[in-house]
Image (cartoon, rainbow, N blue to C red):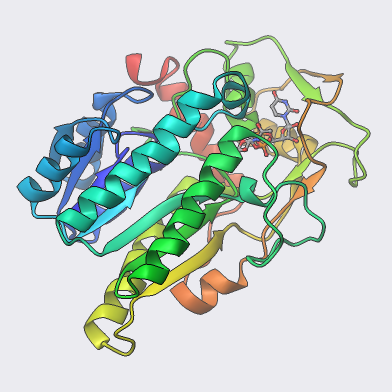
Length: 344
Ligand code: UD1
């Protein structure tokens, strides 16, 4: 049994589908602060399987212990956390509380219940402004905002913890830019209010909910002057979690290495696309035009960011399969069938 914290969120819900499809039994632990229980109903519909649900907050040690015991978890995938960079600058304590304290409580609860396997959602944000591209896992870590620092702090806690108990099996997954939606059109990203991120904003422009995209800067040192990112299809990302879990379990059953593991792995495609590449691909996928205007750079943005994905292939036997076309087409499908997200 796997406890999936934050399983109702964007990446969590897509991972739940893949876990259920692969035959894993799962229980979701979520406080729904930035997600909707409807996502879980749809996960069950897509997979044709049931899952457990415990409503709770990761900062609540007692409810985590109760959840781990109740579902007899032998592994945890930890998605629960806050993820908006701008909000983290305005409300740093909330980010350290949810992301750092929440994870600390979870780790204490796991220790108490003798659960030794963890897959943790980190972010390419931990690298900060790249000094070298593509980003390999040993690139220096220098996040530039409280959200990124909260992820790095947890990574450091996990390294220390593994050092103190090397029978633990831990995977730290550094996501690049997750986009797209499940092919069914039943689950997808459902941002509250005005989307901060490019793809959901573009999708809302295409469907007529917003007038035009602001392109934050066209004077970056990139081929067309706009920011370049490594967009990764959320379904590929979800598979990455399965692969990470399987790699940890394989190391346990083969006993090759009794000492557990602490893997740190990038999940990206290795390809960089500019803002205008994304606009063009989305226009093609949707058949709609995406009006845009060039606006000043967004403070804190970097020019280019893309992964070296080799380690994920070597250690997890995982690589991204879906391209920008599928990312745009699935976002569009989700946007059209659910114009107001889960409230549609
Ligand atoms: C952002 C976060 C990052 C997080 C990631 C999750 C910031 C500074 N970084 O990354 O920590 O891990 O989301 O997906 O917020 N863009 C526009 N117009 C828009 C929105 C975006 O031109 O309305 C541009 C941005 O300038 C950037 C690119 O599109 O060049 C991607 O932006 P976004 O989707 O917000 O992702 P990141 O900034 O890479």
